[in-house]
Image 1 (cartoon, rainbow, N blue to C red):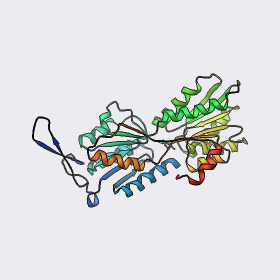
Image 2 (image 1 turned 60 degrees about the horizontal axis):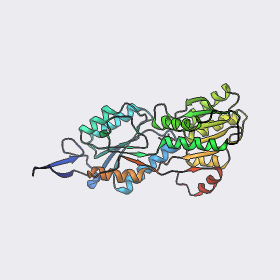
Image 3 (image 1 turned 180 degrees about the horizontal axis):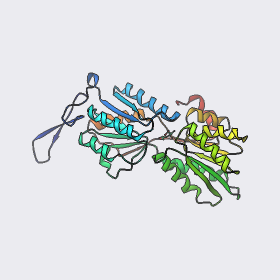
Length: 325
Ligand code: GZL
């Protein structure tokens, strides 16, 4: 959108105030043939989920006629902040990003607000107290995802009285999915004292780190019954470690993960994972729709929760052939 002009009639006055979204000085980014210009600051490319999310955003921008400026922060907050500042400089119409961690965003979000550029949070949330710093948050309910994982485990062990030793591979330290998936899971399993989380450490949502931390867990803990991994990729890395230790994943150690990306679903269908809680990365279409509304100055919901489900081994076999990611 070269220049969005919305007339604002002031209550009690006839003066029209012309406001332009985009640059604070009224000039906006130059989108080819007047296209809306979005600056998107992506977390990185750490997992299959992130790759699918990036594809969804890029393809949706193309089909929505949105000019997308895209950056990959390699999971570093300072890179995301730099990218947001560059979008402000370029006077884009709207900024969208998935905050790699929850804290430390108020200053740069205030700069975007002062520049009259609306911000949309997608995928992950921030812990800013000032909710005027962003227009809406589109993404999953990570606490509920943790609860779903816990509920499956309670059901799986409902007839057993023996202690259940659990190790947990957390996502990126300080990120909303790591904090909330841990909290939701703990809320459910802490209700029964037979469940013991004997070790919990970050694998940073990557396969390599998931394998490394699981190797350490296996060395330090002779009896592990369950692994709860905050994403498929860490779970897949852990499977390598479990097999390397001569144990059978899915049998000697039951595994619950979150995401339901293709490789995770394949491992689930093969019996190496026992249960997956879906977290949909396909946020692109809703993001573009919200961006157009926000730039037009239309009201949007403060929170848009994405639809998602869960998969057992049998359900994975049925779903695999038609999965989009
Ligand atoms: C969740 C997303 C998480 C995924 C991981 O919405 O932020 O980040 O669960 C990804 O796979 O790395």
